[in-house]
Length: 111
Length: 112
Image (cartoon, rainbow over all chains, first blue to last red; front, side, top):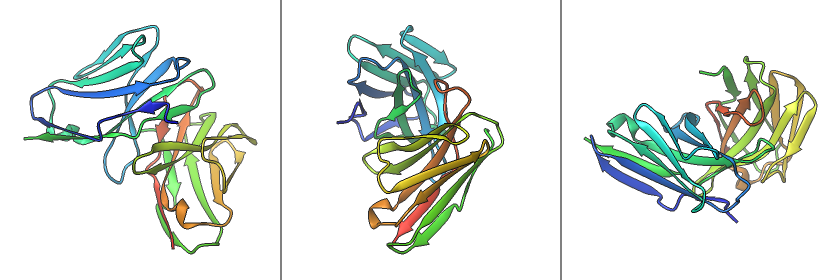
C-alpha cells in the first residue's frame, strides 16, 4: 500500500516553461513534506520542504504547494532549465522521523 | 554537501555470501538511515539508527541487519545475499529526527 504516490512516471517540458510535478498521499498523519532531486549515479539531494501548517513555500525558482484537504502537493519549477532534468522524489513524514518516498518522476527539460 | 561517504561504491557478489556496506559521516548527526532504491518503488527504508547502539527496523528489513558502534559509522549487513537484494543502497543522516535527511552517493550492489 503506497502511502505516497507520484502518478506520472515522466514529464517533458520545454526550457523556460513551467514544470509541475505532482504527489498524492493517503496518510492524514503526515505533517512534513519534502522534495528531493536525483541525478544518475548520485544520491538524492534535498530541494525544498513544507510543513503542514503552511500551504506554500518558495525558494528561488522552486515553489511547493500543499493542499491538505486533497492530500496533494505539487512542485513548480519556473523557469525550467536543462540542468533541472533529473528524477524528482516527494517524501512525507509524521512525528517519528521516518520518511516515506514516492516512486519518483523523471523530468526532462528540452532546450 | 553533508560529509557522508559510502563504501564500497560498487560490489558484485554471489548468492548466499554475506555482504557488509559501510556508511561514514563527519557531521556528528544523531540519526542514520539505510534505504534501497528500486525502479517503481522509489526509496524504501531498510533500517535506521537514532543513536549509538540504538536501531530499529524500516519497511523492508527482512534479510538485513545493522550495527552502529560509534556515531560516525552505520553498517548494513546482508546476512546471505539473494538476487532480490540487487539494488542501489543509500545511506542518509539527519541531526534531529524530523529534519531533512541528507544522502550519501550510494552503493550499487549486484547479487549473481
